[in-house]
Length: 67
Image (cartoon, rainbow, N blue to C red; front, side, top):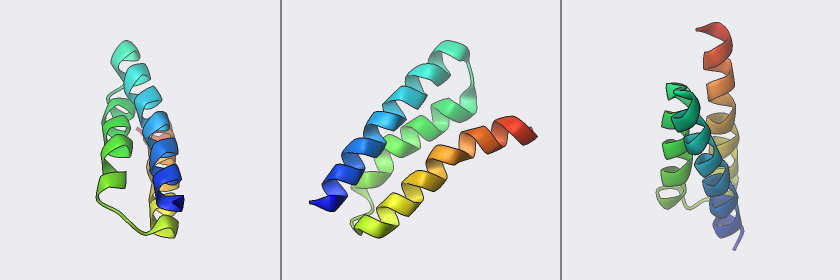
């Protein structure tokens, strides 16, 4: 049950990143939006899914700041 909720939450964040990346032509948000929507199908462990989701959600901001 926990992995389903984490997957749903990260999918919603991924959809938001995807829409923002598409409108503003920020490719890092576009790419990580797709990644956030797809990775819950591949990871079944709840804790690992949550950790990966947080890392993927932070990555566009780090890329935007340093590149």
